[in-house]
Image 1 (cartoon, helix red, strand yellow):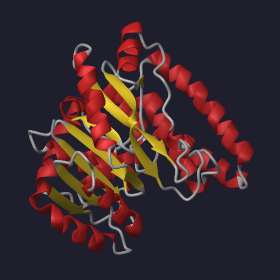
Image 2: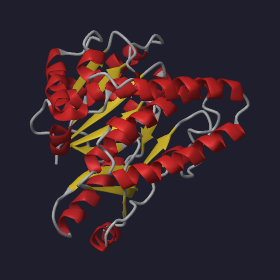
Image 3: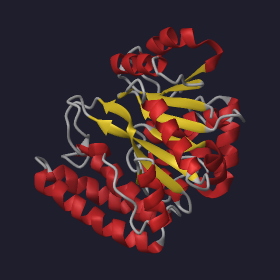
Image 4: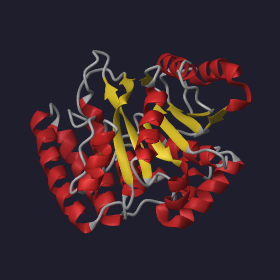
Length: 325
């Protein structure tokens, strides 16, 4: 199995350094590395250039000319990864993700054991994500797949894993063949729910695992969930969730109903805990309006003036035709 790691960076140069050093120290080496810098202004590009020199031809640095958000950065990085025909897994993460030394080895070992239990229909894997205190990070805690059948539960249990329906981009392993079949993340999401939509789209009709034997540290400023007083970013939560429920083919109709109810409860908790409810109300108003009146633009439109390399842009164009926009 050949693995290309994709790391998206934006204005966190010291965390970027730590993440890149951890990738270089994997007990099972990464085969290739793609670093996408989202037009950072803090010298992250210099850190990347310094550390990627030791990788030689195994590494690729893509510096975008504008900040396309996590969604755009991952769309570009994944496109650049699957340009290579021999890649089997694309391992994605942000620059505040520090993989443990056996993060890659643990995921691949779980996949190998899974292959021995039956058909190799695994499309996505996700690591165990902890905070700096070693406890599970509530922002990235996976949930078991609803209505998983007995065979799914049995096969996951046999390899010490759990079946999942979606996963965050904080250390997700994406099967390259499935990406080529389904498409890329939707760049116009910019922030939030791009990973939910994309991983759920990859997993519709396929299988995914949460692998506790693959561990990474998510070095956020504090240990908390993303709905804890999100401020102005709540706009993207509202707009993008509506886009998922109304326009994405990632979820079945019954799943959209369940997730919609869960989202309403989540938003209620967010309002109750907020110190600035007026801001959240304005974000809700604008996000609700835009989620209903606009569709996400095709990624080829969002990214065409962002400095995307030609070969990656060709992949974006090709996979936009798959319906991933």
